[in-house]
Length: 184
Length: 255
Image (cartoon, rainbow over all chains, first blue to last red; front, side):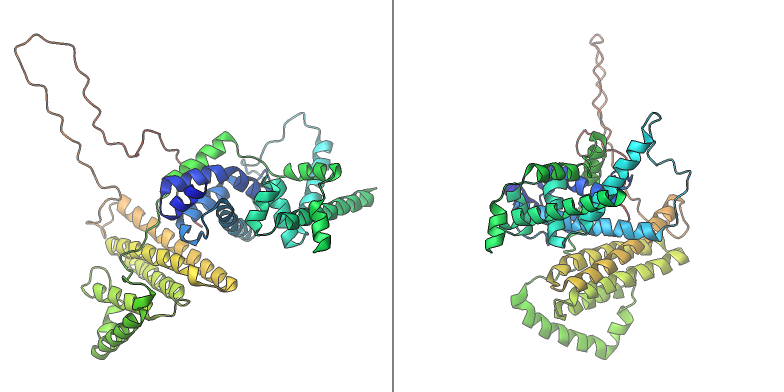
């Protein structure tokens, strides 16, 4: 991977595309988490992230995978923020919008609502973590990186990443328990 | 440090692992279709212009020389009024080369932190002129202005590296995206005029230059008995470098 990154920085388009192919899943998962998995714009934002990355290859600092992922993640963050800003500025979508996902006919609506509410609580709780904790949780669980890889991307020791992860999960567990108590 | 080390050594307990798995479910992997469409868009995306046309050769060691030379050149131009005359020059004017030269000099003598803003200023001015040209029916001139605008934007993007202040970088990126969006809109206008065969653009070259199809020599007529027909080679030029058909995706979305 490091050789590919070096080649990509040198202008090798094929190397860049190979790297993007490998990074597609983590970046897609990150964008899907930020926008919501049912959002039909996820694909567009991921596409814009990679095309934007082609245009700003000069801003990639470092010749290794952590540098690559850190760079791609920063572009994805920027594109997600742009997308959310545009969404807030857009008029409300029509109720006739046929791009909305269809709900299967025999779905247990009550279970769907509970699941959706719990997802939202967890999502909100993650956004309320400290920036460092949120970054570790995102990289570790949403993007699927190992502790060692997360440490490389965020520029911390593995011990520090484990500590951040531990504190983040404890906070999330506490928040979820509070919500459950509130419902009861 | 001790607390962090203690926490760092601790393995996640089952409850933490379960919560981690629950978090993972908040995201979603791309479908095969989505993956294919995204990668097709990446493959079809144009490589950004490197903007070498505008760059003056030489690195930082030549900077003092360039500064001296540039300052002298600016003074000279200013003294004869040529600078003022060239600053609005259009690509179809002989003064346009003077304008490019002036811009190169201004960039060369500028503080590195000011360079991206300078390039964005040039780009925004070209978009403004392109709008004016489109309004007057000068699609060809507008197309050339927009082409140079892309070089300015690419330069600005490259120069953003020199910006240390994250807030400033963010502001410049927003300005870059704004100018780029404006340029894309004007480019679409130009293409619409060309598609309609607009009166203002009779000499504008088509986007995809026509390629000559190689002539395959006809088989020589001989007196020998007819043989099995030999299929003629497919001489139609493929628009794609490889045989994989490209998916119809928007490779250049508006930021």
